[in-house]
Image (cartoon, rainbow, N blue to C red):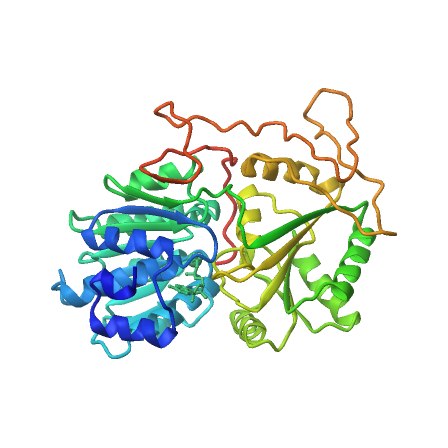
Length: 442
Ligand code: ADP
Ligand code: MG
């Protein structure tokens, strides 16, 4: 299939051509016609597979071809969990609205509210936003969405994780009418909490899923190494920096403090490194992202703030200095490399404090991971059973393959085991824990 087969407006085809894309990716081939039919959709496919265009193109097509429901109100709203992702989506959108009468605005937290109010007074057709700041404007009556035709949630499950359900419900209520189309996108939409979101926001949704979130990403080589303690992790980091053929590296840590400390450590080792965390002000965050995207720094040290959606094509390596608390974030973090068909490498350090997280990750991935080690930097720690389990402590040798404790796929509500490959209207596996965190990134 080529883009011309999708029946898109010639202006959109020209923009696609300008980007140099030869043909739609698999998920674009599946999702674009489904969006054009007008149904509510839940779309999942692996990281880096082109989900952004899978909604931007049909959204633009719909706005160009159909009459607005309201002359004043926003016609489409795209929500993303972080300011950085919203910015990236908006940058892509701008390529498609150029040479069309369609207008857009970016509305994210951390930027001047009054300036945004002025932007909204111009009644942009499309708004790309983070949920918190958008709701502020809705409540302040600087924007109206009764006539909203499309509501698009990128990284929908992450917005739920960050505790945005109240904001999403309020936005949903403000644009509650029969003709609204709602679309949800992520690489990990097959876990139970997402159902809450789906039930309240989508009408009789159609599911387009290419591969499940737990499936191994064929372009990302994944390595795990045991580490005894912080100093050991730092030695492993140093070895990695000095021996891996790194174009750009993103290091994920558990805390903002560690992000700052490790950025300093990398700099001391002679690598140009920046820390990105929610502690920085928006100007600083923008500057870090711009400079890293422009290749001015080789290493970005960050938290789960940057785990989702960011598309930085020079990132050859991802390092989990600490494992993420939420298993699905592992899939998103490593997905910052191996994008759009490129190959990437992901490395994870597993110390005693990461052990519980590793077990959750293995359960989410539905497979045990294998460990490797660096000669001279082997760990004494070889994994241990989490305290909650009552059996005696188990010592597992490095490089052996362990069976994860709870990897059996759950049944769907209908009782059928979820198909591994491609499926429509599938169920979910519900392996991830329910959680609510205070939002500090929006
Ligand atoms: P996802 O949201 O699925 O993680 P993105 O939408 O960020 O993926 O796209 C990943 C990369 O693939 C981006 O750099 C994007 O420009 C590129 N891309 C998107 N569509 C195509 C296509 N049809 N052909 C080639 N590259 C594409
Ligand atoms: Mg994306």
